[in-house]
Amino acid sequence: MKLLFNLLSVILFLLDNGVSGVVSDVLVLVREGDSVTLHTGVQTDQQEEIKWYFKDTRIAQISGHLSKTCTDVQCNEGTERFRDRLKLDHQTGSLTITNITNTDSGLYELKIISSSSSSDKIFSVTVNGVSAAEQDEVKEGESVTLDHGETKSPNDVMKWYFNDILIAEITGDQSKICTDDQCDERFRDRLKLDHQTGSLTITNTRITDSGLYKLQISIISSSFSISRVNRFNVTVTGSGLSSAAVARIVVAVVLLVAAAVTVGLIYCRHRRKYKPAAQNDNEVNILSPDQKDFPLNQISQTEAPNA
Picture 1: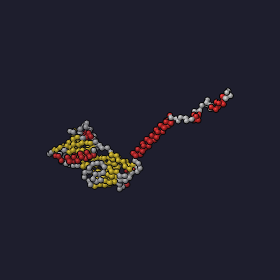
Picture 2: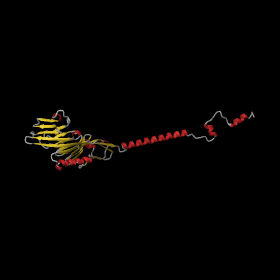
Picture 3: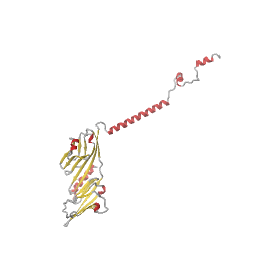
Picture 4: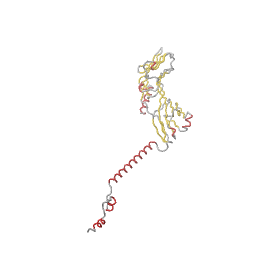
């Protein structure tokens, strides 16, 4: 999936830069939850009228000296698709859509009208499903690499956060590790940042390194910019057995105990059902004595006088 997304990104980048004869239309591929800004490419002198349409419905407008500015429901009563998710730059007329959803996919048309000319530009926006947070589990003392799986462009800005604290960033070709004082103590000399991909490696991990890591990526081009957030849940276990290994051991012990109990019950039932047979008269007398029976010598003595 990541490879496919990267391939599509490259294709869209080439199309955006004029390959295959595409000049005016812009193709934008984003993920659900991203923020995307569609650039007008102009600096308004407050004389132009700038209108934005989504599927032929007006969603934003700036008109002369900002005397008339509207977004979404203000432009068209009863249209609430983008409620509180549209932002209009009053300097350039660029449109930002925040927390984008699948239903926001479609064609966005920009109309710039001045006293001497007018121009149109169409943006085709495709929204893909959001990717789930990645799960990483390591033992204390090991290293873990958080890889977002995308190709970094020279103008991309990347910022890494741990529990909402900035711990590393790449701005252009420059990088900075642990900009926050708290970070200096927590991750001192244990962070490595790949300048080519933006991936973050944590060495000599500790239990306290467990938590949520966020990578905020700002993708910038001449026609649009995207703000994206990737999430990583990291769990650092003790240096001994992992929780999964302990669970497997417990299950094995329970199975062994159950087997032993079963064998014991079968053996007891077998002993009760098949009692040993008597081997001689003495054993008969011992196993099942009968008080009405007398020994032969006593019977002979009793019968003798009658003879």
